Image (cartoon, rainbow, N blue to C red; front, top):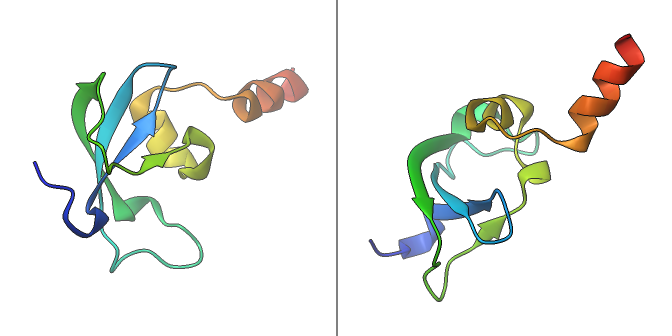
Length: 82
């Protein structure tokens, strides 16, 4: 699939695994809403040459939960609640 106008971007979930997502630029604002991202559930090991890679920390919390990726921020808040 072509990476035309950066509609499709990749989220790095480990050192050699990526998840493909669809980004709706018309829904993106300064607040970075979760409805601007659509997870395509495609696990990829090799990226296309011109692919844009997003860090997990840059995604909204709702999208991180859907991906099932644990981040350090979440573990710290859980420790504080106990």
